[in-house]
Length: 394
Ligand code: SAH
Image (tube, rainbow, N blue to C red; front, side):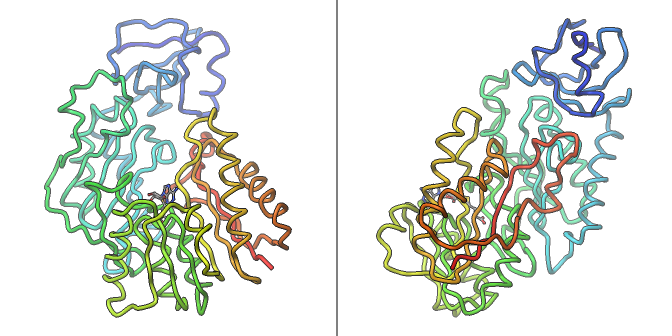
């Protein structure tokens, strides 16, 4: 097997189980690894450190195991089974009630570069590394063997694989690796959702807001709710089940609004208290004369990279300031950031600045994060990305 040797002292983060090796840490490579190949990593004194997927780029190796073991069928089957058993024991795989959950959350499940979401009988799989791309067929079959409900595996990595990776265009195309007739209605906490993994964003649904949507349901009763950046209308459907007086959903994408309306109709066919608007968030908040008791702000990641951080923080401040201006007295604001590059503290500071600018009296009721099926590997703090605050605004 190809061996990657690290420069002296560059093994320290690996000894603390961080799974990434940056290209600058490499002293030499014995062999001529292809991108995506499994390599062994050793320190400058030839001590074994781990095995992982090799890739050309800033992260040169993603560690799959810190043990000297073969990355074979048994390895994949064990890892995938452990992830599935964890989801079952967390009560996320409950037929008739909840069959929507993340099965594999990359580094958080010790499988860097791989994301798999389950929607009823379909698994949607995303590779972020060439190594995971090369393993896609094996992984797909193991998922189908491990998760009894899964009959279809859809591979959706066109947008997530490294742009320059030496992969044939036809190989990269999004397609079913197994099956192809998925029932695209899935259940989350007893609610039904149309999930469009073929054309939708990411894997088709934002599974990561499940618990936060449940919290909103508890507070929705009798309130006038604005769900800004609604996408599939997740928060709106929960607000209606929670007994909201009315719900307005806004998203700049017409397709998202169409999905939201479909999801409302699916759960509440007689509903007359919901309206959806295909409009830019800032434009909506400037033009609307409606006032709200509960506002959700769940924008897309404003900063995908560190260099976009300043603008992102300004964006969060501007957006939250608009909500503070519009929310009624004793209103609730659910505000989120899913930018990995923005820390909890930075996000809170941006929201603080927005509050101070409007002079409203604001208290933090809840500090929210990603749910248990998006675990954070304690040795890889980068896996934590979702941050939210629930604020009481007087
Ligand atoms: N809250 C959603 C997920 C939101 S994803 C859920 O629970 O599933 C972010 C959404 O913001 C996307 O649907 C995207 O279309 C929308 N969006 C992006 N820019 C926008 C803008 N300027 N105004 C309104 N919506 C926008």
